[in-house]
Length: 291
Image (cartoon, rainbow, N blue to C red; front, side, top):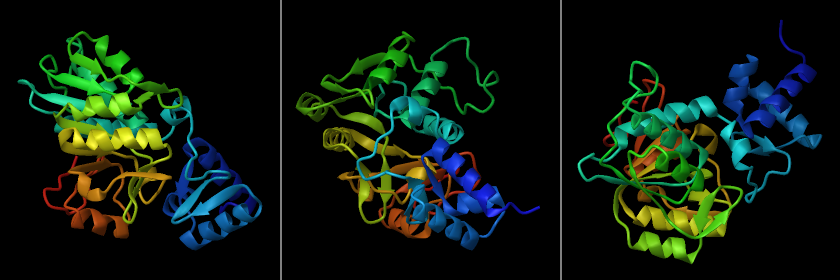
């Protein structure tokens, strides 16, 4: 039996409260209705002040280009998708013989750190974690990070050479920021950096709400030979206040759903390999691969 409008509205708001943002297609699939029905529902909810419409979906009422949720809130959103992305990211670790990597602050990058920590545990095997992806040896890897939570998790394994870059710590993200951090990164050149972002746009590129974090993220891009962006599909097509890089600054994007056509075309033009994690689907860009 089809849901009545009040029932659909309730489900939309519940999902929005849990995820922070929703797409028209996501709601159409979840509610088993047409995209046109979803758009009407979103228009009505926006008129009532319950949410804010954005291109292709909606965000919570009051969300702006500088809106940031706490780290704890973000950890609970899109958790399954972030785990899929983290598993796919393991394929892009540098060589273990003298290899080095940098991990940016963020909840998806933190999911990658969890998997690296599991890989460095001699009691953890691929068979024990069938969905974990490859579990490489990590004892010879040098790892740098700007994130206090990630440094804590990986330094406690004792199997990695971990360096946390200094600076002022932003409480909402647990990230080191400031001139000290940017200067430290200018003296580093790692094999690969795993980046997080708040938005990936065909027009605006990569963006984040905070100027200080944007400066660090720009320095992270310059501090590695290979740049891998980890971004769940809720970030695709979105923009935040401060641009920190362009699509051309990326080598690989790992996400959980195929980008919208406009963004897909821009990524292909920028020669970014797009990996759709947890799926056989992949964007056909040069060097593209399935996770």
